[in-house]
Amino acid sequence: MSKQRKAIALISGGLDSMLAAKTIMEQGVHVEGINFFTGFCVEGHTHAIREKDKAKPKRNNSLWVAEQLGMKLHIVDVIEEYKNVLINPKHGYGAHMNPCLDCKIFMVNKAKQWIVENDFDFIITGEVIGQRPMSQRKATMPIVAKESGADDLLLRPLCAKNLPATLPEREGWVDREKLHDITGRSRKPQIAMAEQFGFDDYSQPAGGCCFLTDKSYSAKLVDLWKSQGHKEYQLDDVMLLKVGRHIRPQPNFKLIVAREEGEGRFLQGYKNEFISMISVSHRGPLALIDGTPSAEDLYLAAQITARFGQGRDAEQVEINVTMIDGSERTLQVKPIRDEDMPKAWYV
Amino acid sequence: MTIETLNARRLLCPLPVIRTQDKVKQLKVGDRLEVICTDPGVMQDIPAWCRINGHKVIEATAGNHEYTLLIEVGS
Ligand code: SF4
Image (tube, rainbow over all chains, first blue to last red; front, side, top):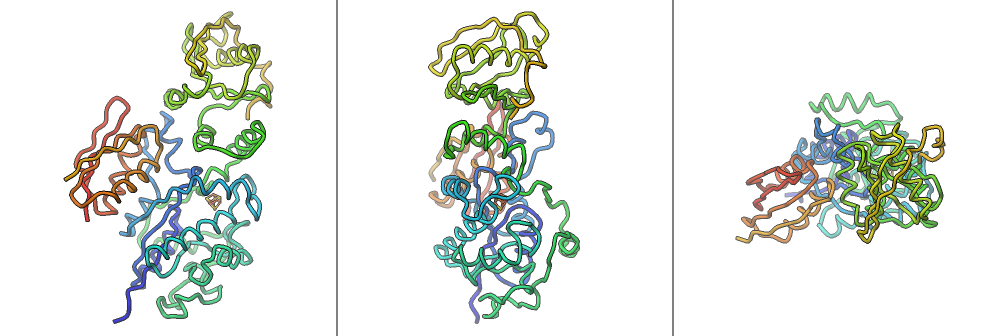
């Protein structure tokens, strides 16, 4: 009896990786999924924070895909290791701060380590030639295979027929004839396949799978790096970039102002690590102050905090300031006027 | 049977799922794990993860902005 072959499928939660895994499962291969959490994944986060998004709870798409396919899913925390990918991408960034090609190489490399440790035979991805301008081109396919060290253990079932045969095909673990030859940006072939497999309600996020492809998020990340003078970051730093309005009136400090109750509650959790401000004379949002503000800067920050509360038109607003050491004081300020807040302050 | 507790407060999904997954790996079939979280997303994600991986959610409770799930480790 021939050996039961086993493959690990990189699952992003999107349709392509779902179809790739299903294509190989249909051939009798045992497939399990692997999903990497970089800290920038769109899954859940801001939805968990913002009140307005709570009405429609967000599912985790990778878990959903695994459940639909009836396969196990391993979610791997790569937050620490991913820093080097984001800080020093050998192949550079995409349209925003997304180091997609390096990211792909990194993830396939992690999957390669995983198959060695878990005695699996090969790796599947949902890549399609020409699907993405940076990371999914004919020229990048061999780069990912080679630089990840996966070489011909890396099978892309959706476009395999347009690529040289990999080991699983040559060895007959999978039938190349039953693989696909999709190319280009059209989603039609994938949608047709999804229909054929009876998949509906799958996720096709317009902005891709991570915050790094988002223009406004990337601007906040660049601002963070610029202000601290280096690119190192902690998970909390990048989480906070997803929450609130970020306003930088001076290079040495910025405010993170909650936009609603859920964000306020989330920011509360960081009160011990930042100077925080809240209006006590009128209803208003919590603001965290990041950086090294002078006494004058704190006064300006209080005026800005007051501007976002119900006292925005009042002559005077009382702002409570809590320092990192827990000491408190209050400032009486006149809320800053809109016309005195240049657009450039909004990160 | 061991009953362990995992504090996953302040972690946002999928981190509570990842921590649960890593903790369950150290437990034996029939052991129980109580996971305490503040991200409401866990009420969907942890049961989904359990269904996929053959574990059972014995109880899920919510209150005071906290969400607690009691899981029994399956095979
Ligand atoms: S979109 Fe994000 S997760 Fe996806 S390949 Fe690019 S950098 Fe990696």
